[in-house]
Each structure stands twice: as C-alpha cells, then as structure tokens.
Length: 174
Picture 1 (cartoon, one colour):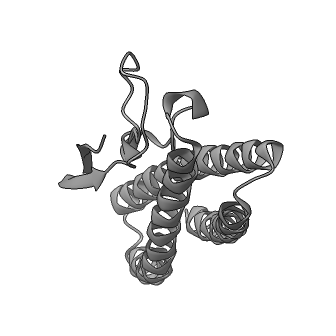
Picture 2: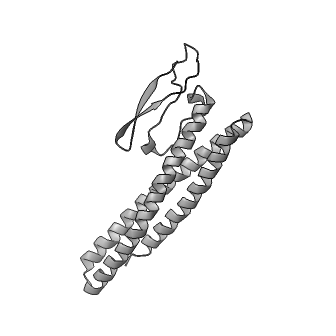
Picture 3: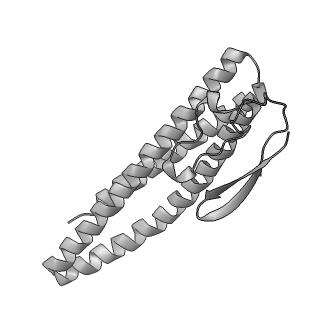
C-alpha cells in the first residue's frame, strides 16, 4: 500500500511519499505522519508510525532541516550584530532618548525571538535523543543512529553559536 501525504512547511506545499510497507487494514494511521515544522517538535511519538524506518527517517530529515535553518540564522545574526553596533554608535552621538528607547525595545524583541528559537532547538535535540534511545533498544538502525548523533552534535554547536549571538545582541542595549 503506497500513498502520498501533503504537508505545508515554511508556507510551501510539499508532497512526501510514504513508505511501502504492508499494514493492517484496520490501522487508520498513515505510514509516514508528518507534523508541522513550525510547532517546533520534530516528529510525533514512535507509536504514531506504522514502520520504525519512517520514524527514524523523519527524525533525520527534520533535524537536517533544523540544522540548515540554524546555520542560516547564525550567519544572518552576525551581519545583524554589525548593523546594530553601527546603529547604536550613531544613536549615541545624537543623544536622543526616544531613539535609545526604541533601540532597546528592538534588542529586547530580538532576544525574545532568539530565546524562543533556542527552546525549539532544545525540543528537537530531545526528540533526536529519544529516537536514538529507541533505536538502541531495538538494536537496529545503526546508520540512522550515527546520522542522528551527528545531527545532535551539529545542532548543539549551532545552538551555542545562537546563544553567543543572543548574548552579543543583548549586550548592545544602552
């Protein structure tokens, strides 16, 4: 039995084929369930998938997407920090209190957004670690375990960079 399910990710429509394993006719769950990426959770519980391969592949796919998003965010934040430093120096020369307050408010808004992203990445890391634990219990899926472990290491590195960027931005307040 082979079906396709549509999922909306980042505002675009994506079609993902399900795996082609046989399942019980009374089982109404799709073989590959795809949760919304914007909610922050990588994948649903293992029981939501008919075949374990789908669960691990979905974890790998979603963690790889999160790594790409984190890498581009950190690159953009480096540029953003430089622009904010220039803006702060120009505001300091003028001594306008309203501009200083607006600048501080924008810094607070940015740091809150980055804190929310950090929480989502933490959830993603926990989900990957749970998948690794399940795979180790089943004593299978060695390749998937290695890939998930690599993705967890990379997400942690990118999370450290994100945290450092957040600290740098927070330090720019007047």
